[in-house]
Image (tube, rainbow, N blue to C red; front, side, top):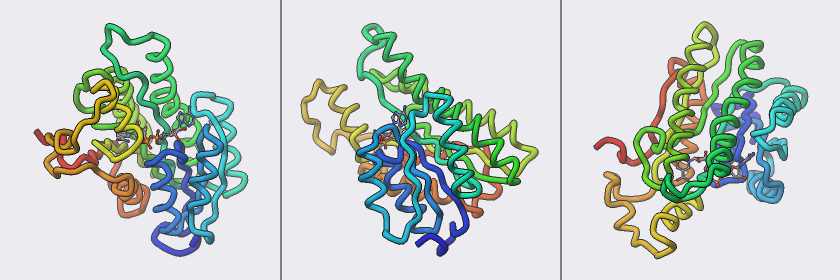
Length: 258
Ligand SMILES: NC(=O)c1ccc[n+]([C@@H]2O[C@H](COP(=O)([O-])OP(=O)(O)OC[C@H]3O[C@@H](n4cnc5c(N)ncnc54)[C@H](O)[C@@H]3O)[C@@H](O)[C@H]2O)c1
């Protein structure tokens, strides 16, 4: 598989690769010919996600915690040493934190959510940008959320962290505007996934909610798929997006249009 397709010759590093969006994305990028570096702190999940790739895919799995500067520096260094470069960086690991009002929100969880969702994204860019500058180009895609565009009751801390990802993305893109390093973010909406189920269950005290009610405010009238998020990452990572930087792409079936 590596060596064929529109991304052949590219090295793509994905964090949160064991999760639903990350796993769908390493699959799509590998199918398009990219050589894959898959990073996650969950070793078993990482094994499952990389084993699901086509046998012909070239993949380097790395167990690392994106909040630890030494581990981030090490995953970038190993990528360059083993793969010879880094062209697409999907800076995607994230957690939802607790689903609870601000008045009950534990400070410890607040700090943990910011640590993974904001510090993790910052550290990834801190170590990847110099590599991409040296090789004269690359594409970074950070994962924000529609919760980074609008207020989100009971997940205020998650929402704040994703607003921060959009700010980091725009600022980093501006800092790289004199280079061929492009930096964008995606804002997934209601994606059929463990994380969405966790948020819906948390908001409804574990009581099942009919799908029609969940998609009530989504113009597409359905949940999105991780593969549909991956498709936008595939576009932003490719040379087709050569004039796109500093943008935030909702992948939300129109949820944020009204
Ligand atoms: N699922 C959705 O509906 C949705 C919507 C909007 C945004 N997002 C965002 O998309 C991204 C991926 O979400 P997902 O649905 O695949 O969630 P997920 O929980 O399935 O995957 C997240 C992955 O990140 C990994 N991770 C968490 N903390 C880490 C750390 N410190 N170091 C390394 N890895 C770590 C987890 O092990 C997991 O494999 C997240 O940033 C999330 O906030 C998801």
